[in-house]
Length: 281
Image (cartoon, rainbow, N blue to C red; front, side, top):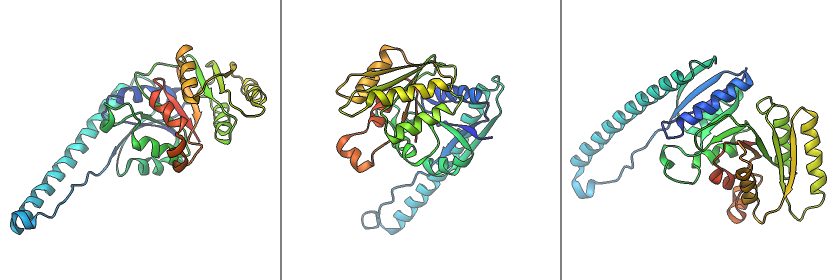
């Protein structure tokens, strides 16, 4: 059986990530893996031999190496404490829980686990971006690289009483809709199927077709074609006005080069939405 993987790092969003992943694991009757990835922090070595002398430089490099080793040991111990605390936090939820600590680049670690993973749960920012409104670079790279869904948590997690599907009829949105329809994660939760009006033919027909597909599979669905000059802002306004507890959307329909010129609704939603967002490829 494939796992729910909770990515924890000691940031302010660690507990919400654990709560969201435990909820998902319970809904999907899946094992929960608590993952702490240790990325190597390299020392920026400079050539100081011309200013302080060769022997002094060798002594300094020796001390820096020793300091790096101490930092690595502390990071390892800190990760073990985080995993122990996370395991204790979910011990009364009747879940199969495994704690896992891995060395290596964050995205590569997630890729290595992909064949055994059903859903990743991550915080919008890690420890390096905790005071910033932007999403972490690791998150965007993971969303572009991984084929499995990612739930992005932005704040305190509450069990969603409704969810919203951001739908535009394109290939990524259709694939996202199919994954939602075939998963029990969001079953029994009312669905708002939302499309933003654009100068595109047959939008109403595409929206109605999608609504019927979800309805036939047992979802309680209401669909809306909404106005807005900005897709992201229109979706965000609807989510806030209707107190939607979770948003699902397809990820990154454009390349990074195109995103540089036209922006990305995925990144904008992840940045501004305070509800959890599930991104699907």
